[in-house]
Structures are given as structure tokens and as C-alpha cells.
Amino acid sequence: MQYSDLKIEVTDGHVVLSVTDTETFDFIEDILAEKHGLEWSYMATDEVDGKPIYTAHFLEMKDPKRLQIIVNDIDQDELQRIWNLNN
Image (cartoon, rainbow, N blue to C red):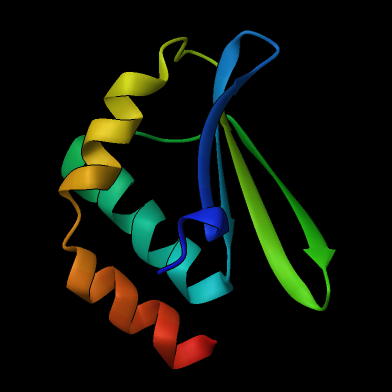
């Protein structure tokens, strides 16, 4: 998976996760919620060049390291497989 399609950053003092692709976002969201008990505070959607972009805002999370560690621990082969199915 191209890392430009998954971005973790701090915006307005809280952590934000942006993911291009619906299925990839769903996969990551399930892992965050089911395995780590992380729920986003709100989500925004956008579209760039015909591709959906999902942006989850974690208002209670101030340091992106925790989210980055979780994302890094996701099976990268499975993440790539899901990405490839849809792109």
C-alpha cells in the first residue's frame, strides 16, 4: 500500500487519520475499535480524483505515536491485499 494513501498527523491539537479507499478504511477502523478500543470522535469524507478519502478525528488523542504504533502493527500484507482489491 502506498503510504501516501494513509496518513497520521496532528491537526488542531488532536490526532487525525486519513485513509484513501473505503475498504481499507473499514479494515483499519475495525482493528482500531475491536482490538484497541479506539473510536474516532468524528469523521469527514472527501473525494480527490474520484477516490474517497476518510478522515477520522481522535479528539482525545494528542500524540500520534500510539496510533502510529497500532497501524504499524497491522499485518502489512493483509493491508496491501485489501488495498489492491479496490485500486
